[in-house]
Length: 127
Image 1: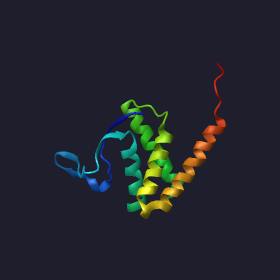
Image 2: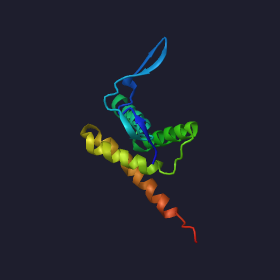
Image 3: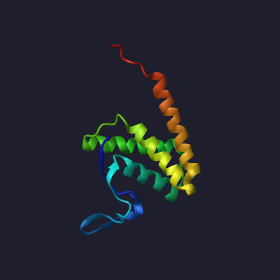
């Protein structure tokens, strides 16, 4: 699993624009060994759940997945563990933030369906 520095609270309200470009502020939750994609998941979820309007778990899940795939393509990252990283991030958010649990549960239900479908279609390679 790829780790790198993550912001920890990457959200629209922590981005400033000026004549000299974009600035990301509020690095107090930063992690030097953060897990890849988590800032993308955080950004999409926080915007959907706190800025709104809430568009539903399936739609937010798709935005999170698509945003991570775009990041992977632009940076040369693999997406093999994408759903598992998203699942762990969602569980962490569910436990840590009671104010958004109902919305996170919608995403977790979608994610469970997706992982179940992946498992059902899995064909082991004969050796």
